[in-house]
Amino acid sequence: MIQVSVPATSANVGAGFDSLGLAVSLHNVFTFEEAEGIQISSVDGTHVPAGSNNLVYRSARVVYDQLGIPLRGLRITQRNDIPMARGLGSSSACIVAGILGANALLGGRLTKRQMLTLATAIEGHPDNVAPAMLGGFVTSVIDEGQVYSVKKDIDPELAFAAFVPDFRLLTAKARAALPQMVSHKDAVYNLSRAALATAAFCDGDYALLGVATKDVLHQQYRLPLIQGGDEIFELALDLGAMAAYISGAGPTIMAVVHRDDQVFFERAAAALQQSETLRRFTVRRLLADNAGAVVS
Image 1 (tube, rainbow, N blue to C red):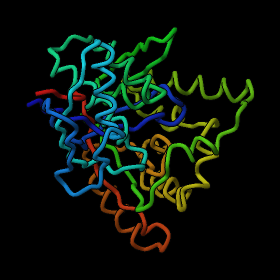
Image 2: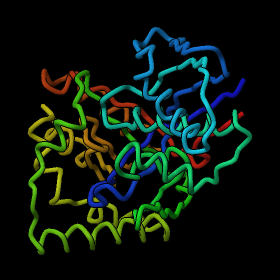
Image 3: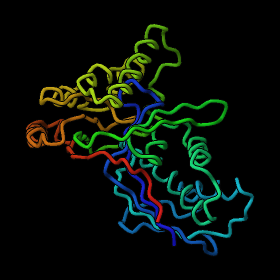
Image 4: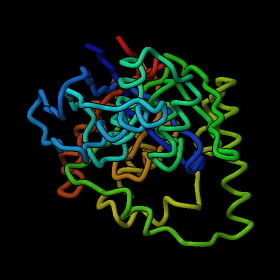
């Protein structure tokens, strides 16, 4: 039996639309065994598709097809700690798990880059699947069908405050809210800040993150889909967060804070309870995951 643990991820990190992402300390765990037919179950009671449309199974099948090996069937179990459709990479965790699990069952024939390229082909962009597989803070691009990524371990002195609402926001709906065209000025605005965010994480100059996570390509169009989102941004920054941004497509809002700033989380939790709108959010203290997906 193969077991795969995959971390949650927070994509875009503000300005790095579809290219930046980081891994945090919340995990889904999957087991894989070859079997006759498809046998899929959830060990925590979360509803998951039990047939061939299951994303973990579909991703595993891509590996078998890539290697030209017939797939008789798989027995898969899932433990789903990453909340679904909240902007924390639950679908990417399934994709990465399926690919890594199948590759391990078949003797590890694919390289990490090959697996990352397959995962990106399924997901459509690498901003979640790359940190899910590699861990840390990851910058990725797609060039001529290949994915190229650079990982930087995240400083353990950082923590992440995930403001997670009790409602979902499907990625398709969040993407549909975006304009088809952007101005040259807006493109330069985001390009410069995505570069600055990468430099800030690499150099440890986290005072730059407040500027580096500003964005004009997607957040202003997605915030109206997140009831209370503007207030969460204001709350996080008022309480001293170094930066705040929409995690992935939302609706989770992520803030970057110092690891030892326990007062931030206490005051944030109290503030959420004092507002009828913000009561729909809970704040979770997460740390960086620099290991990425682990196969055992």
